[in-house]
Image 1 (tube, rainbow, N blue to C red):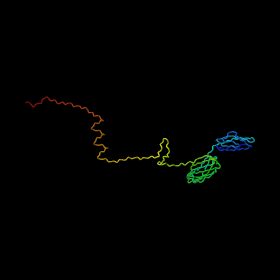
Image 2: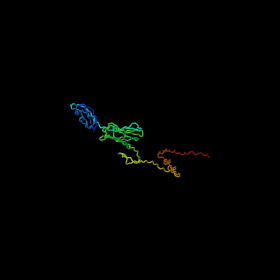
Image 3: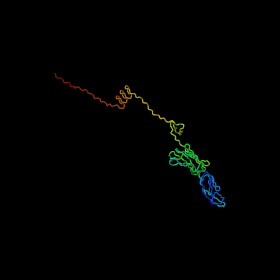
Length: 312
C-alpha cells in the first residue's frame, strides 16, 4: 500500500484549496491522520482530502499516515506551498516594426486566477482603425466599440483562462505607414464572484495649452504667491519711451549789444593782476641804502695879490 502521488498543487492565499490523496493497494476502509509537521493555517485533513482556504503564505512540510482494514499502514511526506494571490495584468502586443497596411495584435493576460470578467480600454492612435475584435484561446463572450478615439472591449468567461493566455485578437488598418508606441491602455479584471482583482486606469491625455496672452490674463485664475514672494502682476509692464527735451530756438546775437559770454575789452580783467598795484603774493623789493656824496669844499682864494701893470 502506498500513496499514488506525493506532489501537491500550489495553494493561494485566501483562495479555496482542494486536493484528493489517492492510494494504491491495501484493503478499505482507510484511516488518515497527521503523523508529523503542520498543515498550513486554514487547511484541514478530512479523510483522503486536504481542503480549506489558506491564510498565510509560505512553504509547509508534513507527514501523513494511512492504515487499512488489515492493519497495514504507510507514511508519506508532503510539501505544500501557499503563494500570494497573483495579480492579473492585460497587455497588447504591439508590433515593434513599422506597419504599412494592416495587422492583427493579441490581447494577453498574465497572472490569471479565477478570472470571471475583464475590460480593456485603449486610446487608438491617430490614423488607425479597429476593424474587428475576435475571441482568443480563452473564448470569452466579447463586446467591443470605438467611441471618440477610445476602444472598449468587455469579456466574460465561462471558465477562467489559463494563468497566461490570449484573450482576443484586434484587427487594425493603417491610414499610412507608422510605428505604434506601447502604453495608453487601461484595464479591469474581476473574479468570478465579482471581486476586483486588478485595475489600471487609462492615462488621461495631457492637453497642449498655448502660451497665455499677457494682455488677456485673468487675475482671478492666477496661482497664489508663495509666502514671502510678491504675487505676479496681472497687468503687463508698460514701457515708457525716452523723452527728448525740446530744443529752444536759436536767436542770432544782436550786434549792437555786447555778448555777456565774452569779456569787455574796456574793463580790466578781474582774473589778471593790476600792473599798477603791488602783488600781495610777492615781497616788497629791498632798496639798498643811499650813501650821501662827500661835502664839496669851496676853493681857497690865493692871498697873493695879482700883479700890477708896472711902476709909475
